[in-house]
Length: 143
Image: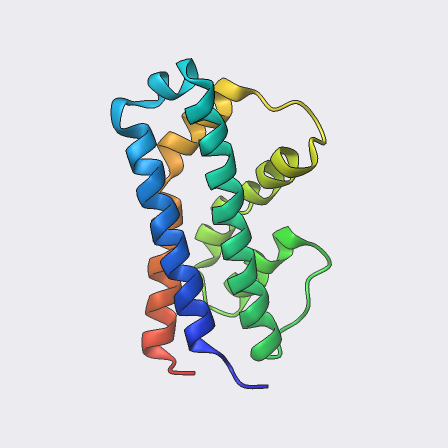
């Protein structure tokens, strides 16, 4: 197998597009999103899409670089951290988004809507950092 940098670049571009959408939704602050069910549902969907794109990238790195396979989706972030693709402190910080994504998608339990919207608003730059870390890795380690 060969590492498909174009695949990763396309996923990173999708993440950037989703973040632009989120910025438009959050333009008036997170309180506005809480008052508007359509905006809140859009943020939930964007969160799912962001995490799905990140997981696809993580799996691609793991498979193509023959890294240790994870037993779960959260572990993919730790594996990238252990292999210096992501800083480990960042991997530990961002890994909870997988649980949030799972709750949104599978309705494992009711999600606290206010906490979700407030957290997404506050931590949305973490998605930008993920993109930067992946881009930085690919610049230093041409694959």
